[in-house]
Image (cartoon, rainbow, N blue to C red; front, side, top):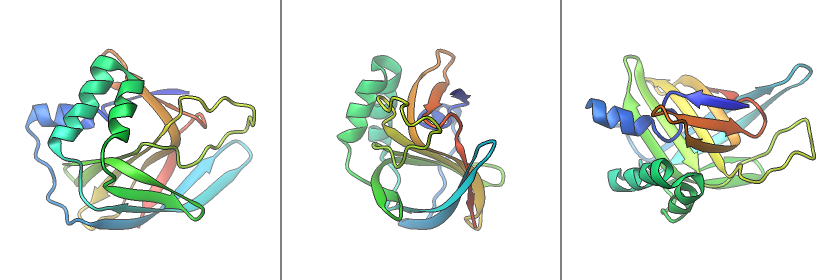
Length: 183
């Protein structure tokens, strides 16, 4: 399923920076445990996901990733992302991947945090033969209040591309992003 996200995932930072909205001065390192729920017509799966962010991405590196996506496409942006140092981790009990992109902006209620890992954390699909090629990112978007609690979405395996309207089209391997709760 393709989802057009209003500059979630990777491009939220570009529009926010152009609009002059300031970043949140959050305390880093930041650690949280999120409850992630995936639902189908017949099954609901809930898991805990540990997120640790040492620091947000530097502006110059954020711009390199966004420019690569916009001007050179997904594969080149993935190459740029993979060349960046890890700034945190995201994981479930049996697997952990490095966070390479963490960017937050202020909202009326608190902050919006976009997290991207350069490897998939997990593949969920009702079709075991589904081709995994190209689904190489983990993407999390959280809307957090001032106390650090909130909700959001997560894709354990995703790919992105420019949508042509200034947005990003994100395709999630499972067909729909999972719901996240941070308490």
